[in-house]
Image (cartoon, rainbow, N blue to C red; front, side, top):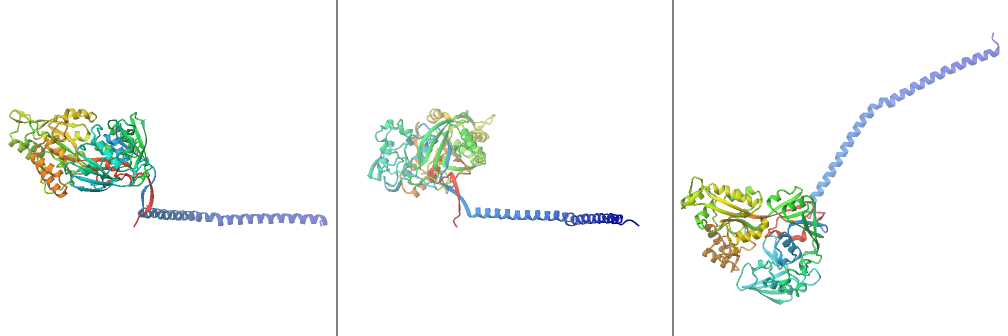
Length: 597
């Protein structure tokens, strides 16, 4: 029997071992329980989390698409009920063809000078959106026979703050009458001007002259500034470099700069005239960037130097970037094959008729690809009623028969001959992409019926040489040339025999007593219906005599950035600078508004 003390120690050891075993058992149980919970609440649910995550992601995507669709729908509906309109502000920079040697509008000869005249100065009348003559400074005209009583508005001011009145009209008209001024406006010598009130004048003509209202589009100069300047010194006066007008914009300054291609350009800076009687222009600043060539204009446009460009040809128009709006607008000018009716061969009407029948103008316009309108008479479509005019249709077979019947027979070289003379014609034109295509087209067409052309192309920059060596002496058989037809159908200058001279514009040397009588009587009649009937008779005789062949109506080409609002293609233009007739509505800044129902 153990001692009592050892027994207690032994019992204590047994108890400790038992405690240890119990602790081990509890720890093992706890560990297993923990692992069981981890497996149950973490591991076993991880796959569920992955599934849930995919579902959550899918729902997030669906909700995102719904939000995006709602946003797109909101934008679409907003665009459907809102529109972008012009706003005040911004700078409109337009590239035009120069040069600009004088800023006085009485001496404006280049495109840039004419453009500047329209922006700075006002006139009594101007052309409306339909191409018909309408009011500008004038607000009423009373016509009695050869007297024109004109009343002008009393709210027009010069850009120095002085009021514009009848004295300015009288002063400018007298400048036009004075040959020592040598302005670009002619035909005023026999017109009397009288002041009938502070805001009214009377023009008295030697005879009734129906187109006179078109002559009242001349720019008005300020009497109070120029009244002491000698007329023959007006061109050299400081006004020519720092003009003050009454138009929608004010002259600020000009500068000559050099662009990246080292070509010199001129920039004329204008500011909006806030006191303009026609309403303040939307554009704050207007810049005319004047270039020497059309290539320079296209480079400036495509390089972002300007946001619009005028004075570009059909071929240059095709090179304009698609980032710009491009417009081809018919103007009241036409390109003709003008026939010298006094030349040795073409004095024969039958030869002229053969040329007429063998000119397929429809195909020519397709080749030019310039969106040109048809032109077969001395008038563009819509200028007068030509419904009952029987126009010749292209027929190469008929053309060849006319020549055969007239004694022009084909020789061994496929060139027609008559009485030992070959049918060879001299053709003169100004060199340009379009005119070159016209010449090639006519040459190919006419050569097939036995006509040979000797072509002379004159560089456009040598215009004085062209006038002196070809136009004035009529040194050509055929002339490819553009004639300005104007708004009024008076074409007396081109086809009346009195204009057959070195300084006249009857480039065909056309003489017809019938046509002379029609043109004289038509311009002396104020009845529009009677005038139209007379001109229809003239067209029939003109087509019969063939002093020229109408090729196509001319276009004005314009390009402008899609960030500006300017050129209104729905308007009818007499000349390219008529685009400015609504310049107050142009804008270089925009904002959105709700559409009016």
